[in-house]
Length: 187
Length: 370
Image 1 (tube, helix red, strand yellow):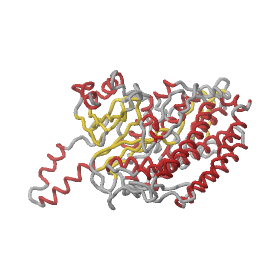
Image 2: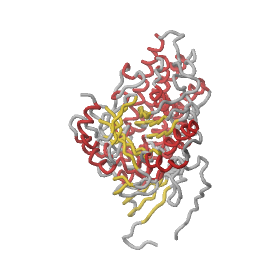
Image 3: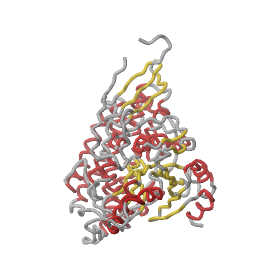
Image 4: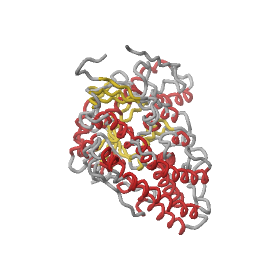
């Protein structure tokens, strides 16, 4: 059985989609089932995905908007703004959280992907399975504003606490918005 | 004023000579014992990942130099290999060999920095000089190869920019005995030194289960007794052609981390010797670059590629969207995972051991904060 088939067998009905690109397998699971899925992948006697390498956040806003612009150019002003709202509703959720898993015994890697809509930016934490997720989850919160439910210490990691934005979002400008850090010394 | 029985909070860093750049730890202490330590990071955050989204694939290579600046070449290679995986580019064998040679040199220089500074932080200043003279020699070789000492911008996507200079072998033959001598002298000065042993053995010991749970990789994981090295486990470049040992420790304390790094330097020299032997057998006009289009356009898709950098698993996640710029770059720096376990490591230890632990983990602020 290939790794892909093994993952399919392990996740069963929780698997939303699975894809392979250049040998990297990405399995998509529903957001609220992520803890169960990762536990299942870890405890599976054949897969043994027992090591969490990293947690990655991705903002797909620019990716979804790009083909739309192209289509607009083609269709020019035939049927424009009215169905804009309908198109927006069709778009897949804006954010993604990707868990990089590794099997130490078999030396195989895979990614588990969770889609997070803008209206509901909460994902269950996986720090209960691996403590390695502590800082990566804090960073994803810091950079994208995705909250991890049940995280023991969800503060900002790289930016300071009262920084008002989430800088890795695609609508945040590269130059920043002129935020300054004011240190307040307590007595 | 603190009343009797109350804990005192001590702020160490971010600007402190023993804090390796810009790290800050807020330690809660009872006398000299650490009750809790809260590391605060981000003082060197430059938004490298955000920058990457606005630069083309080639333009990002110099930025990767600034991650782990003690071994810039390892970062360059890690990034280039991730992009090559995304594009599906096969690198010629000779270029791979040059990468191996340069990467192992970078590993030695990185370990020299770590061991040397660990000595300085614990009060042993002499080995620092013995080692750093040789590190300078390694940097001379880098400089002589492409003009830069620290931030090398080594290699290109699809290969390397230049062949090794003709008298590389003589240079290496000159350097090798000196390197052995320096490592040996450090070994004699430190390893069986009573003070050194008292300060390092048993300090901040860590169990293999905890280490894996916290996402440790590299020398810190191997010091805990887990034999894991991506060069052996997931061979890339030409590492499966070389014979070398993977040293492992037992207790995961400062001493074991030091020993693992000392032995790894010897192993790296072994690898370089074997790689140079292979290199000699190659035809002189063998290609150094794969066929790479002038404007690199990534296909739509996402890849993750990791290599064994001197500090552990250094991985790049790159998502392409069909344009000439990466849609998203995520760097998985090895010492980031190690440093998040810092409160766990130093709990119950002395304040002076906190500094020893920090140096032995080889935390580099550049790759920690990105």
